[in-house]
Length: 295
Figure (tube, rainbow, N blue to C red):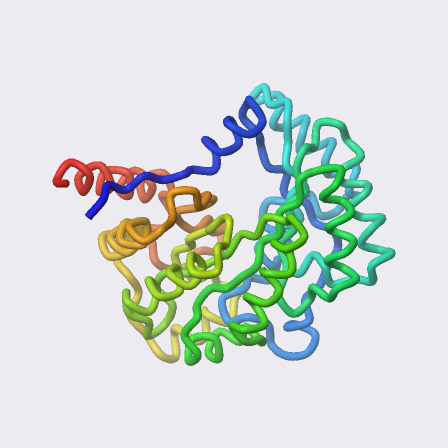
């Protein structure tokens, strides 16, 4: 047994760039093949996780507005251009180049962070990201969510684990950092199922991980599914235990980008405990300390 030591994102950024670095959530006007070809992922909201963007403005204006907001509140000086909503490589390469170039044109932006899907990263797009990575650090976030076949089918992820990790390897072979999103508490999953998903990110040397609690928003298909099926939802105690257990199998250099979900509270249905993000994180930290003191 060894003590839990978390490589938190804030600590990584301070060590790498010498100061706090803040994310600028951006909406590049992207869609998602899963929505166009089917019903979309079961848990996805109408905004495709873009609840905190200024989506009515051009990219440059979104960046200026976000920087102004954060500079006033946090005295922030360095930023991550984070394309958050939907699938942010789901356009032709020429369009992607213009969008990304606009995002990194501000000298205060030091990282380009792109959320996308494993099936929307062909060789031409990876080549583009590799070229940008020569000028500015590029991160690519992909929604793994689970490696359990029945869960993948239920949430309608739309592609295999092999494709996910093949895409991740191609990115990493080009020097691009990959972040895996995983969800704790998916319908009918056990803790072992969740821990196996986390383990697979470590087996494939994924650089970063985002752990999300499952929450139900009223503008998602999950809302209807839950009311028809009433599957078990994790309590806060169960969720925080699962997260702490997952940290026991993380490599010490894996960067932890997120410990819990961040729902739109105006649309959040269940679980109610997920409304208080800081309380959840505090409980995770308390349990980590308690575990380490026992070793």
